[in-house]
Image 1 (spheres, rainbow, N blue to C red):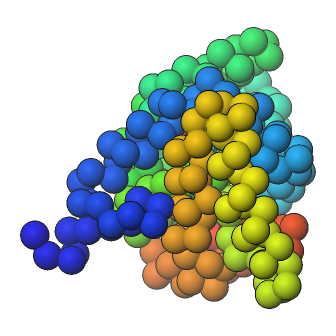
Image 2: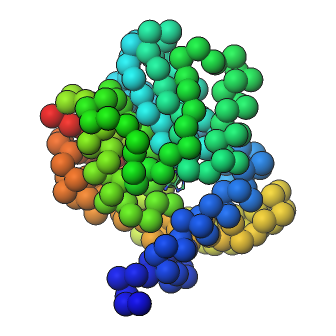
Length: 249
Ligand code: SAM
């Protein structure tokens, strides 16, 4: 085995083929407390980040949307509302426990007619070329082992004129703010994980995985390399999160 067969899982180096399994264990473990932890860790601000992502997506009546790594379905619910009865949202995740959370949540909100569910690995999309008006992945890409493959797969499945929406943790732009944010995330988030979800390790992985994810400009370049056009990003909450948008022409 050489270094190319290794990748990061948080700050640990692991065998590349092992990462998907380890990420799976994290999300099986957090699925039940996922929504309450999101609110606790972000003080509710993740709702505004997601609202902004959907507003920027340009999704409208009749569109066909793919929500990757959909988890408990925050974006899916908003997209289902935007596309209306003439459109459709395919809600997907690689993890059965997370997809079950999403299905329960979306169904309990009374949204059934214009949505469907599928277990899908973002790296190998089982959909035709040129199919979707919008493909979104929110707080999912940093968990994907082969990000280039996921981006290429998204680009292939978008219709010409379609948009990819990537919402993900990123790098705060102001060094002083970054210091405060680092102190918060390394000290408070694992503690919240232990206190609320009785699962410190999964939330330690979360804060470490954020630091391993490509920052704003690097992710933008990866999207350009995957064939996206007019790639832009918006820094949210000082760059704690970035929304990248790319088009296919
Ligand atoms: N999109 C939701 C949100 O914004 O709240 C859930 C995000 S959750 C932090 C990350 C999700 O990515 C998990 O549900 C996990 O199962 C999923 N995931 C991890 N690796 C994946 C992959 N290779 N393909 C698809 N989903 C994946």
